[in-house]
Length: 356
Image (cartoon, rainbow, N blue to C red):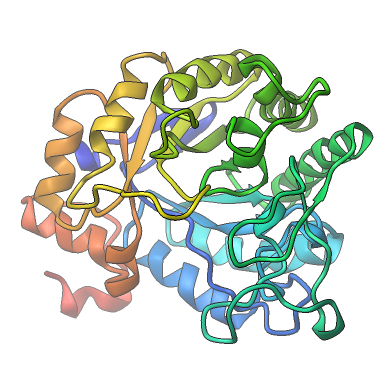
């Protein structure tokens, strides 16, 4: 059998295959209250029906200030827990595992969604003060307020509380968003972390926020639930965050209770040259995989089944995260199974006449 369609076990979770839907923001909490809607039921339900092993839902804020936009989903109150639970129940009925990406946008918060405007939302139009490791603004956005040491501790507690609500809602796995220039990445990178408290300076100190979040989540949810981390493994800037630091911090996080590392790149600063192309992040993910004991996932311009299978056959990366190809075709995993000659037993009966 193609390795794509081999199951994989992470802690107590058995996932039916290694094609996972990457978390992708939908910006569709239309009442701007963090509540998932019918859009989320249809969007995520379709990907579960389409044969993905796991569907990881979008960056979901652990507190209101952590939203990228006013239209982001949240998991900071019990109403969110109940709303997500209904969606998860349907996804489980289709055989998919369901993960959630727990997020705080930091200095990239309080901005318009792509089709509603550009840049930061003014305070008098529903925006809010963003916070960060620094008081330096992301280019084109309003300046953040630098978090105090005590406030950092509260952010850690927010992640732990969000993790508990996520498990209560029925999510099978938790992913901590430490990538793409959002809050945790802002603490990790020396480009945006020039603090002189225990959360700044050395690599150990810059990683402290993330490591303490992992430990707090593990203490909150117990031993059964997988805890994953999405990293941007490089800033593509000399003197910034890079692959070697990523691997070292991943090992710290594994000691604290993390189980899988999801490797992406970039997003912290503008004006950098990113060498995009088919599978462009695979060598970086393989670099990390060679230096950790836990499984590694890769994302980024993986568009065909043959390409995805070849990545796994190299024997370093264990999971492929599919993004835009899944937006174009929710049945992508079932289509790939047909193309690779793999028989799966989770074609939806209602769609049997359309079987590839």
